[in-house]
Structures are given as C-alpha cells and as structure tokens.
Image (cartoon, rainbow, N blue to C red; front, side, top):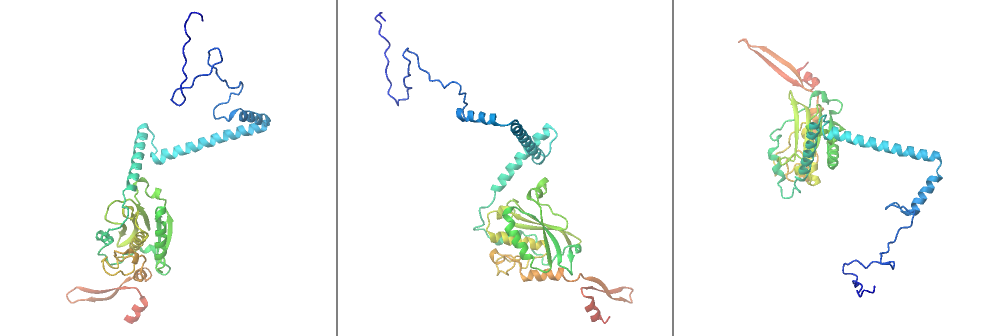
Length: 359
C-alpha cells in the first residue's frame, strides 16, 4: 500500500460454465478449510461415528466368555471356508483337469478343459430350430433295421418264460428334458405281459465321462441323448448280438434334430428305439402309406403312431412267453446207399407232440 500500485482485479465467474466457484477466505487472504470434528476417525463405509461408538459399547458389554465364543465361531467359519475351497479345488483338479501331477500335465489339463467347454457350447448351438418343413419319412432311409422282419431274442438268461417274459433293466442316462418322453414310453411298453422292466439311473456326466459316449452295458439297454450331429438319423438303436441272441443294447436320441422338436416327434422316437431294444423289427417300412397305429411303423406323421400296438405285444408274447423250442430227433432212416436220413423237429409243447405222434 502506498506505492501507487493497484491491487489485482478479481472477476466473479457465473456459475454453470464449468469453472470452480471462488474460494471462501478467512479475511486474511487465505482459503478457509472446513475440518472434520476431532476424534471421529470414521472410515468410509463404516457407518459413521455413531455406529462405531455403538459397536465399541457392545464389545465392552460382552463378557469374556462371549468374546471367546465369538472368536471361536470366527475361527470355525474360517476353517470351514478353507475346507470348502480346498474341496472345490480338488474336484477341479481331478475331474476337470484329469488329476495332473506335473506342471506340463496341468497345462494340458487346462487346455483340454477349455477345449471341451468350447466344444459343448458349440454343439449346443449347432441344432435345428425345429423340424418344420422337413420330411420326417426321409429319416428312415438310413435305418439299420430296415429290411429286418424277424424278432431277435435276448439271451435266454434274461428271459423268464413262465414269470414275466423278458426281464430287462433300462439304464436311464437322459437329461432332464427327456424324462417325460422316457417315462411315457416305458409305461406304454410295460403294458405287455411279456416284458418286466426295471429302471436304473446313470447320471449323464458319468455316462459321457472318459469318452464313453453312452456306452452299452452287458445285459441292459442303455438309453441316452446327445449331440450326435447331422447324421441323417433322429434316433438309433444298437444291439450287441452273440450266437444270434442280444446281450446288450443302447438307444440314442439325436439332439441335432430333436432338441427343439415337438413332443410327438420325441415320444415316437423314444418308443421306436426302445422297441428295437427288445428285439422287435419294423411292422411296416413305407412312411407314406396308411399308418398302422404303432411306433414301429414307418410314418411321416408320428402323432398317429406314438404307442406300441397290439401287433407288437403279440410278437413279444410269442417269443418271450412261449416255451423255448427244444430240438428232437423224430425219425432216423438208414438208406440202401449207405446214407442216413434224419427228421428233426423243434418243439415248443411236449404234450401236443406226444399226442400227435402217439407217444
């Protein structure tokens, strides 16, 4: 002051133009700073000084026994969490990574797990939206059962001819989306007096583990669904035969076609493939003629052929409830030229045979 210099000019900036408002001063030219009350020490998110004080008061009110119990509870909780995390890690190490014991094995396991996950995601997306506009009858042209008109029996040890006929275990390895169709088909086939069916559950993860890909099991019919791709078949049955008798069977539902198909297509396919698993052939192989009303009839309209028919039940009864044929020598003739002529009969009723031959 007194040197003739003018004090620096100040200009107020209108609010709203993005500038910071002028600072408040304490009269000495210094900016005034508002300080928090001393002693609060509250951290962000702690609930403020009131809540902190309340917590301290509660801690002071606790007896030593209560404080010890709370500490013990905290320790137990930590141990439990650690055990769960170790268990999850062990499961991932064993099931997802293949139980590697080296760094290289761990890398391979991680790579395999990632590839498997990608494959499953890609496969799930690679399905038909629906079967609209597709000729259902055309699916039968590559049927491996086509042209077979005879019943193939199961091994005799699975047949109780005087007590329930074919006694067979069906291994249910289907996802949740297929349980309704499976239960309906099993109930329908169980109407036959020649079938005694039991159900065994095999989790999907186990059925497809270790590249099993829904493998057959001796003396049983395995039923599964999977993404088998654009194979030309919506469902297929594969019977393993030894000495002209079935010893195992597997029925597969192809999700590529059936994932988004309607209930009638899915139920017909399930009934059809189970029927082949019992050894039955087709009742008709022209999908465009009149429907016969049974699920082993080729059709372009599955809704009319959803269930087993009487013709199927009769065929089952004839092979699984009738007595097993026995081979009998009926006549032996020594010819003059030194040859022998034998007459052999296959008998299913000894009484009628004896009556007919006067024995």
